[in-house]
Image 1 (cartoon, helix red, strand yellow):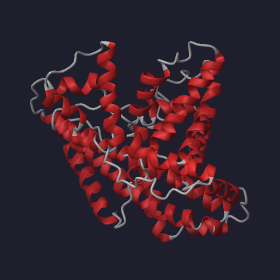
Image 2: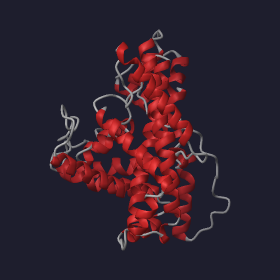
Image 3: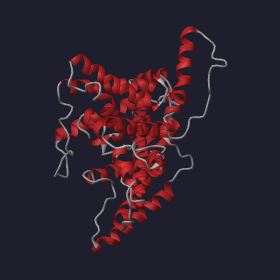
Image 4: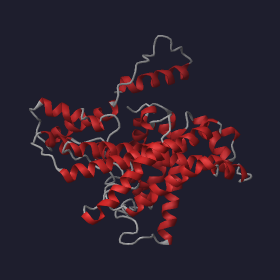
Amino acid sequence: MAIFKYYDFFVTEFAQLFHISTDGLLLKVILPVGISFYTFQALSYSIDVYRGKIEPTKDIVAFFAFISFFPQLVAGPIERATNLLPQFLKKREFNYDTAVDGMRQILWGLFKKIVVADNCAVYVDKVFSTYTEQTGSTSLLAAIFFTFQIYGDFSGYSDIAIGTAKLFGIKLMRNFNVPYFSRDIAEFWRRWHISLTTWFRDYVYIPLGGSRVSKAKVVRNTFIIFLLSGFWHGANWTFIAWGAYHAVLFLPLILTGKNRKYTNQVAEGRILPTLKETGQMLLTFFLAVFGWIIFRAPGMPTVLHYLQGMCQFGTLRASYRFFTMPEMWPTNLFVVIMLVVEWLQRGKEHGLELGYEKKYRWLRFLICYVIIVVMWRFSVQNETFIYYNVPNN
């Protein structure tokens, strides 16, 4: 993975630093699909065997099925050998209820990807490609739309992968748990890309001493895992800066012992959050928004120019006209629907996890039918896959 993914990056940076030509030095090879994901899965197997958590398997077919299980091969979730490998070693039987739930999860994932993410991308790409001509408020709104785009894109794919696995009797770990309803940045990271976050926690952070060491080492450990997390996403300084940004946000919480303050669902047992919870979620959301600007930009100069432009708000008229165009209303509505559904279903695994009462069967069919029609009607031709476009797979 280091050669395929990072060799050209380091050679280019080294050459620029010492003013050396890169002629003949760059490999310029095509990155193997899913390399970051199956590399981490293979590492988890080796480490868990070394630690004695699992016995080394003698079934080579089960081992390679674990490494290359197709639903989650290219974009996760990053599975552990302790969870996935034993499922290939035992007999599985088709379960109708599990399969139906898997189909609903696939449908919800397709809605988030095709309807929310792809429609957001149309306007996000338009603003980011002409950000020097946009008002500050328009740039901020585009960043907010990108926040929903990347969530719909990645969590939607995770739902599709997890739902597909259920059809084969395989249970994959949950990868997203309504992260934009988090009350601080530590809770956000417990809910965003859970498989990657827990991988770095278990195989990097804790072996380094975790938070049970001196304050200086806690700072070191925190920056190490966030910088590695950023660099894992791709060989670009923007990803490293994105990781450092979140490390800075996370550090005060872990140093004060407040990083585990919120481990339950927000507004648990209530329909609406309190005013304090609403403020906490909005603050955490906008902290994530600014981080996604760094993630989305092609380079650090663009980040600085984009943020500088956001500070020049001026009139709101241009942004109001842009985001209230007739063609924007469906996208606005779809984002709201996604948020409402996930808020109401925040205690469940996915947005379409419905009951099986016969008297509501017609309603379940109606919901699924409406989603299918909406996907057909509002799909866009130029689909984008964020986690395929960045060099992370």
